[in-house]
Image (cartoon, rainbow, N blue to C red; front, side, top):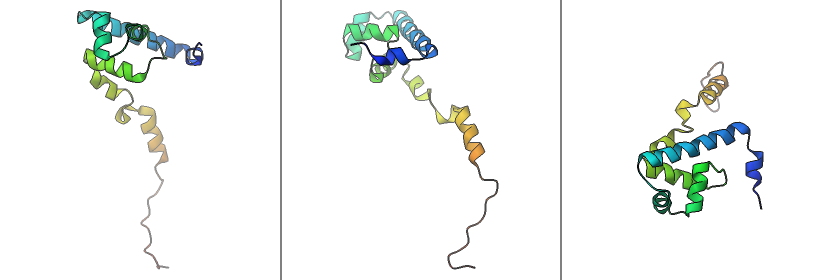
Length: 110
């Protein structure tokens, strides 16, 4: 049965995953690693690793994360949605700040 994940992905996301897969394949080749070597190091089947190189969205994120680790890009994974680099989130936080800050009255004060 075909996954609906693939059918519902926006074209931009499909292209990004395709580029990610191609970049992974290039990084593997630069390190002189075979597809079988990568599959063994990841602990996945050869067919699963080939899906990773194609940017298949149905492959578990853990398999992609392990791929980054094996290729030496594990630090990049921690930067993907880093709160300090989230410009939109930082702007929303700034908008939510109160106009004034008041000191709370002590209990029982009138």
